[in-house]
Image 1: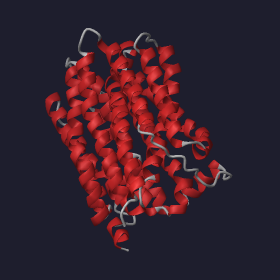
Image 2 (image 1 turned 90 degrees about the vertical axis):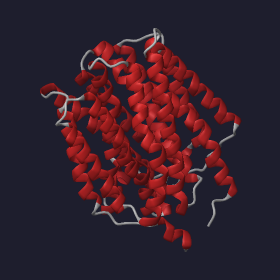
Image 3 (image 1 turned 45 degrees about the vertical axis):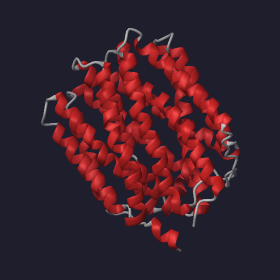
Amino acid sequence: MLIPKKRLKTITKFGAPYLLFSIGISAVVTIWSVYLNSFLNNSSLVGLLESFFFVLEILAYIFLIPIIRKGNKAKLLVLSLLFFAVSYFIFAFYSNVYLVIILGTLIAIATSLRTTLNGLIVRDNSESQNVSKNEGFIYSLLNLAWFLGPLIAGYLASTIYGFKSVFLIASAILLLSILLFKLLKIKDDRKTKYLKENIFKLFINFFKDKNRVLIYILSLSVPFWWIFIYVYMPIYIVSHGLSEFVLGLFISGITVPLIFGDYIFARIAGKRGFKKLFFTGFISLGILAISLFFTSNIYIVLGLLILSGVSVSMIEPTIEAYFLDIVKEEERDKYYGIYTTSSQLGSLIGSLTAALLLIFQPFKSLFLLFGIPMILLAFIALKIKDSYEFKKKSQ
């Protein structure tokens, strides 16, 4: 069964502004922890502050879900992007801890909103048998953005204008994405069901199903890993005397395997099943991270972490596709938002545990902290019920 032309057109159109605003956000994320460390002067404090923002994201989801259910998803996404644009513009001219906390709260709300809405817009415009393929397409665009954004940020941050130029350019790119979003007339005003169900009851019901519990646990992995890459590695790189331009090259480099791998592995999962792909991705990522504990050469560390993108591309796009595949269509409206909290929770766990560990242990201990859980997740992945999307397409 082919995707209706209207849905296909919406997915294609959505890709252009999605690519743009992802470039803007990725540029800021590249220098964000280094920016925070410039006035906090402590990587552990940076992690604790980031943890605070992730808690806000989770709380924001709980309180925003009624709005997301009832509201126009396209308009809400535009509003969230406007939060980012305004906050970045202000950061370009003012910087202190108090401002970071205030605007960081706005960004946390916008992030929670954007994360949920992105997935819903793609899902609303995809047939069930094509979810993984469309997810792969969107993730490929996301990874292209994460290749371009860090390059832009690294170059700008290494000039005399520093962080200010990164925030200004990112703000301009986000405003441009909003304009393009409007010009392309992208819409998603589908109202979700179950408006009267209590959110806490939904959480309880969600975790009554063994397979949903397993996939939720597995879904913690990628945001957990990205905390290591995007929060702690930038500080590590700059503290070793390397420039922000090298930082940009590293973040861009780690994205290269994902640009091609996300789409390829998403299609493989749809045809051959998810279980073996998850296991391979987790086990290889864990072994690689643990091996870094035994080297002090920063260039070897950076090179191997860039290769880790191959492992991540086996997991990142296919995790969400698997969740949407195993949940009944009539349950997606109820449970999709709850599932997306795994992103904030995984980030919170990674940020908080690393921040606490750095109080007592040197940075290299983080290689074990982020590597050992991946080995454990590999064996958890073997317990999931497998699924093959191509069988659905032939039915």
